[in-house]
Structure formats: structure tokens, C-alpha cells
Image 1 (cartoon, rainbow, N blue to C red):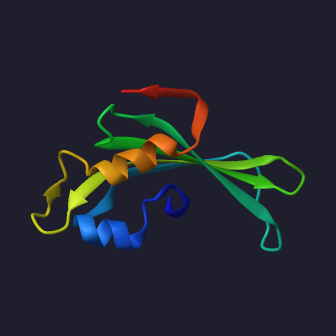
Image 2: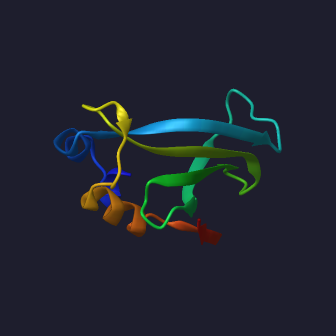
Length: 108
């Protein structure tokens, strides 16, 4: 997220942070303790206003094999009001728009 402008500093300045509702992991292959795994992250779905999103993490080996697929559903919380942040600050929304998307990405 950092490289798309959603940094810790921005979240502090805007008084928002991510909040997770659900994580789901589907294991495809065994991952050994000495395995070298790369995590590839894409945006799978998002509300058009950026207030809700699903991010997909692919755990891929050096042999380019998919070992696990993790989907995370979340939103943004106003860290002062302790309620969901609506509307999402523009800088956060712009970062989400730049975020890499899956081939089957859809707006909700």
C-alpha cells in the first residue's frame, strides 16, 4: 500500500486505518519451513467509493506454483470517532485506484 500513497503517515494525518472483517485462506500446496515464497497482492473487489475492499494475496513459490490464496475483506475506520470512515479520504481512494487489480476485478 505504501508505494501507492497509503502510508502510515497519511493514515495518521487523515485519522483513518484499515479494519479487517474477514480473512479466508485456501491452501493449494504444502509450504515447508525452508520454502521461499513470494506474496503477490491485488485488489479483487472494491466499492466504487473505496469504503469496502477485498484484497487477494497469492503465495507463490520460486517454481512459480501457487501454494495458498488469502482473501481479506476490509474497510477504513475513523480512528477518532471509532466508526467506519465515510467518505474515504481522497488520498486513500486515489491509492486504491492505483493498486494493482486482479484480472477479474469488479466494482461492487
